[in-house]
Image (cartoon, rainbow, N blue to C red; front, side, top):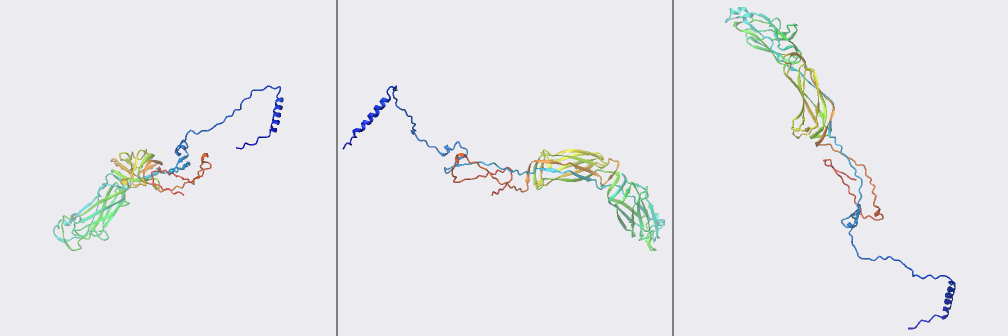
Length: 449
């Protein structure tokens, strides 16, 4: 190899001069022992390699999730919106007043007095002519019956009923006429006042025949005692011979039928009448079965009559655990008032045969033993009056049909705060999951937009 040229020797002279000069400058100063400089350097030396799955990396981060395709995702929750369907599980019992009137009542009275006129009494010569055929002349007759007491009646205004009078003519000649003194007339009257109760007239009744008249007594006032007066006659045989039988007669019978009175002062037998009312269930609801949680109303009943009575108020569709209808029984003296609290709690509304109920029916049945053998004044428009105070029946549960409901949710604007750790990341996709929970026990449909 060729050796490089050596540097010129003259360059050593200046260096030597510089060193010498430094040496002179340091003359007379203390010389410190020289030390070597020190330096510190940190080095990362890999000692191994560890592999972590995504699920391990995000294990402590609630907002990060590992997707099925191994991509990394995140989720955030919004605030839920809740709607209450607000079913009206209750029925408002409006204040109600219901009357039950005695109405017309039956009055059992004896038949009015009758009459019997023998031919020999009307035509005394018939006794000597008995069995002979001979003309019979005209004759007249009349009588007033003894007074007949209408047992247990002081007075009675008849609402309906009839008086039937039957005349049986056993004579060999006709009785009555179209007009005149011989026309047969029967009058019922009050012997105490001579007031006429009813008057009946009969057309001619042929020999050996029968005639019946029925008169409507509506509006008539029967007194406590009756008498009858009868007047009439016969035109005779008109000169024609007839067979005379001295034993024959004219019979008059009268009878009351189906007497119903609207007012009376009388001894009354046992009486019974009824009425009803309803309580509406919640509008548009049809109930098969409902458990009543609570509910009380006050029931007051007034007896307007002069006879004692018992009022039974029953709700047939409201039953207890033994399926017995709810009943309230009130015993009422004459002209009295009583009240009680009706507790519906613990009962069940149950439709008979599974029918759908829209109202609760109640019946009021009134029975009376009568006047106990004593005459009392009573009118058809008297009775009982039941008043039900207002209240509310609350149901614990209801089985049945309810009206369709529609609810519009307010638009939801949800502010979502994304985690700071994902700032700058690009999302490849995002999924919103909307959860709807129905706790109403009814089917529902949701339309989302």
